[in-house]
Image (cartoon, rainbow, N blue to C red; front, side, top):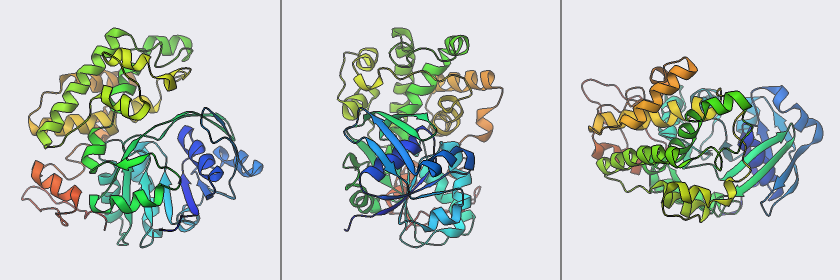
Length: 382
C-alpha cells in the first residue's frame, strides 16, 4: 500500500498538537481541525507547530491547512486521526457524519473504553451509510504536553500501542496505513481488548482523586506520577486493575495487567505497580494538572471507568473499587457521571451476551441481534 500523504488531525490539545507536528515532520501533508478558532489561530499564523522533547523527531512541523470547518477537514484527507477527549467523540461523529466518504479511515487516539462502538453508533444514527473504516488505539502513542499556542513537547513515544478496527477483520488494513508513520502500532485483537486494556482508567482518576488537596493547594505544582503515586495509592490502582482483569475473564478475553502494560509500552519493570511506575523514565517531569476540572476526571471517569463498571455489573462482577472512584469523582465535580457516561444501556449493548459481543467486534456478527427489550441502532463499519 502506498504511503498516505494527506492526513487530518482533529483536536489541538496536548495530544493533537504533538500528533500534527510529528506527522508533518514525518512527511505528511497535515490538516489540523479544532472547533474553536482561537485555539489554532497562532498555529495558522506561524504556519505550523514547533515540536521538542525526548523523541528523535523534533523540529518545526509545517501545517499547510488549519481550519475550524469540519467539512473542509473531513474532505481533505484519506486518514482522519481523532485526538480529542473521549467525551467529545459523540459530538464529533455527529458533525463528521454528513461529510465522510467510502474508504476513509478514522482512528480514535485513543478510544478509551467502547469509543469505536459509540462512534459508529452515532455515525449510523446520523445517516452515515458510507463504508468508513473505524479503528481505535488502546492508549495515546505519546506522553506529550502542549507548551505554548504553537508548541508541543513529547516526553516519550510508547514502544508498542495495540490498535483494533471495528470490526477486527479490518485491523491489518489500518495498521498498514499507519506503519509508515507509526510502526509502534500493533494488532490489538478487538475493540473489546483495546477498551478493557485502557490503563488510563486505572492510572489517571486514581492518582487525581487521591491528590485532590495537593492539586487544589498547589495548582498542580508537583510531578504527577513520581510524586503523586505513593505505595498506598498504587494499592488502590492495583485493586482497580484486579477488577478490570476479572471483567476481562468474564468476557472471555485475555487482558494485560497494568505492570505488564508498562513493560510493553515503556519497557519498565518492577516488583509491584508502585516500583514499576517509579522505574518508568518517561513519567518523570510530567506535571500534575493545575485543576480538578481536567480530563483525568471528566474523561476517564465517564468514558473509561463507567463503561467498565457497567459491563461488570451485567456480568455479575463486583466492582467496588471502581464504584468508589466514580462516586467520589461525582461528589468532587458536582455531577453524576453515571448519567452521561458510556453505560452499556446507552450504547445499546445491555442485552448482548459475551459471545454476541465478541462476534460483533470480530465481524462475525454483521448485524447485532434485536432483543425483545432493546433496539440496537447501529451496524459495525464495513
